[in-house]
Amino acid sequence: MAAIGLALIRLDESFGEDQGLDLPGIGLVTGGALGLVWGLVRGNAVGWGSREVIAALMAGVVLLLGFAAWERRAREPMLPMSFFHSRAFSAAVAASFLLFAALYGSVFFMAQFMQTALGYEPFEAGLMLIPWTATLLVIAPVAGALGDRIGERPLVVGGLAINAVGLAAIALIADPDLSYWQLLPALLVAGVGASAAIPVVQTALIGAVDESAVGKASGANNMSQELGGAFGVAILVAVFSAAGGYASAQALSEGFVSALAACAALALLGAAASLALPKRRRRIEPDPQWGAPAK
Image (tube, rainbow, N blue to C red; front, side, top):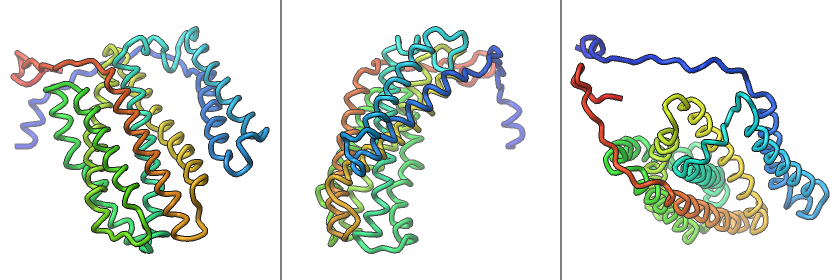
């Protein structure tokens, strides 16, 4: 039966134009991201007014501006700046960047909090975080299907807002005496919110460009996630270091509270950015030849 079912599926194969690698663009965006992340990570250690940090941040900004300028005139740009003329694309990139900044940052510190402040072994901490991350398996398919019916904006805005509520709740109750069962409800709320937003913001970003540009839009989606995660961890490390440290469970807990509050703020900023997503409903027409939804 499975073989018969597969035989009835029509896959339309398509090919994009052959293009060369945008090596200058790759070099500029890589150097720019490195400079900004380096400056953010080193700020608390060597001082925000140090030559090292100022030089790194300035170099990062200059290189990223150079990347944008180069992409405008490159014959084969890796990220056409014309994409950003679309409100949907710009809003989705911003929302994706902030979503993954909050997500990576919270994951980075949650495991440390559970081991150092709450005293769990690494294996125990990993098991206890499964309900938080496993929400993606349940919520993401539902959110993806619902997004096709009602549009992406309600789900991205709502998901990021719910994620912010969960992260803020964790920050409010975090303490070395906290039990896992007190923490679990807030973890689930944060997980449900992120899981609702992740698949839908990707759909919004890729759906904002012409079909011929889907490959580059997918690359932009991956880049926004990875850069968002890197910047999120870098920024939150700076926030953590300013408020706490690793000297004791209490010190780590104090830094963790500030870092999770900053994660919640990033998620809220993502919700605000996603308000610019267009309000639309998608209608999938049946394919007249195959009787199945057409692409």
